[in-house]
Image (cartoon, rainbow, N blue to C red):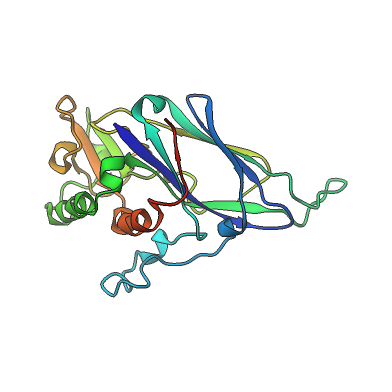
Length: 234
């Protein structure tokens, strides 16, 4: 099985764009310098969607630059983690003082099966199923012996924060259900059986998933970028 790993990063530039290295299993799969297409520019992916344009959550799905970097990865490359290593020494640091520097921030960081990313029908089916499931107990802290997968297919840990200087982002990969995935600690929100969403492989009956609102804009990203900016790991 192949997966799509993607991220949208915005740069608040001082003088020089940072460099990003992408690693899986300590294997360098890409190294590149960010450029003008990564310049920080927050914009909504819902501007052309009248049904979603006024939703209260629309701002949390904004991109922070024009470009989404995409990688098609084989499943065997995805074991422990993905690392993004940022090399950024751009500042006016002098004698212990600094007033200007280049900063970055991430919007979307996601990992999902290629067969879902490239298939609008599969995305729509997940969204429709999610919308139609009855409201469950929304407090996972009351549950025992269950695994909760939060905000699939996103990594939310670094979203919206500013980072300066050299920094490494290590994103653990989990294997609790049919698809490899990112994760975070359970929160007070809606979780549903992975099997009901078609995510369960049959061996994890106590796995519950919350789906990120990112899925509502995934098709916009896949349609725009699936023929651009891809680097194949084969």
